[in-house]
Image (cartoon, rainbow, N blue to C red):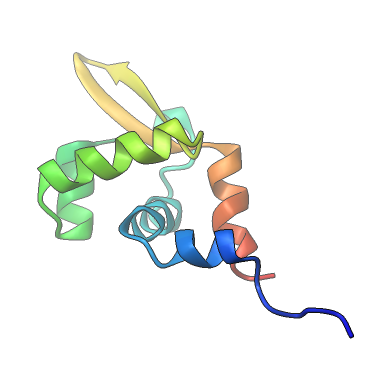
Length: 92
C-alpha cells in the first residue's frame, strides 16, 4: 500500500514563518532581480517587523530559496527558481 502522506521535511518547512514569507514573496511577484524588494518593502507587504523579515530572509537565502542583490545602495531580495519550485510543490 503506497504512502500518500506528505514528506515530513516538507510538512515541517511549510508550516514555518520562512515558508509563509517565501509564499508571500512569490505571490507578490518578487521572482526575478528586477522585481526584488527591500526589507522595508517586504515588511509593508507582509505587515511584519523588519527585524523578523531579516532573520527569515537569511534562513531562506541559506537554503537557496531567495537571493539578495544590491540596487541603489539597498539590499533587495527575490525568490530563486528553487524557491519558486518549493512554493509550487505545495500545490502538487
